Length: 283
Image 1 (tube, rainbow, N blue to C red):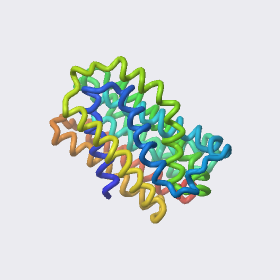
Image 2: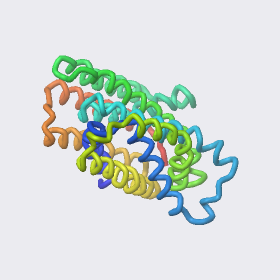
Image 3: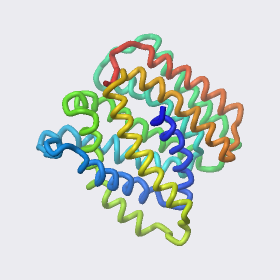
């Protein structure tokens, strides 16, 4: 529950952060600082890095950490928190589709219907509200979707790695191995950032994204994955968009009928996808 709340609130907080800070600065600094804290927390034996670790983790680090966090920050700068929440809702559908396309895992008819519903609901939100949303929202939605696709690939291929080395070590090494990729972007983002516009509000938002949405939430998520079935974790995750949309409303975002209807359709589709059977469980 706490992880779900932290990640839901992060969608709204990230909008505040990107209003003052460059996404090219936000994404790398989150990854580098999280790696700097997580790695020393590993037991001494688990800190040893082997050649096999690079082969297994580096692709996951590029997709699940670097690409996902960069697309999240870049996308939320252009789109609205509610749109971002609905697109993040599609993750189970993207995971199912990725496993079907890449690993040739089977999909039930119910799962296919669920995927179509989920995507249809998201399209209702994205396309149905274009007249009332600020310019650039569609591009932000597309960038956010690219990040979700990258994270779905990370989840599909990370299952086997997580089973062999444990979720906490895999996540830590993913942050660590993503750091060299993100370091040049950090320099670029810092150089082009207009520091005169950054206030305590922006720094506080960035601090939340690092401390609560990265470190605490990832540790809690790893803890829950080790003790609950993936379906149980997913049931809590489904609450995240609703919480994010509610927080957005409290922050002053206008909630339209199109947004609410599309969200309901997408959620119904995602639930159908998750009822499809045990073949795509991520333990």
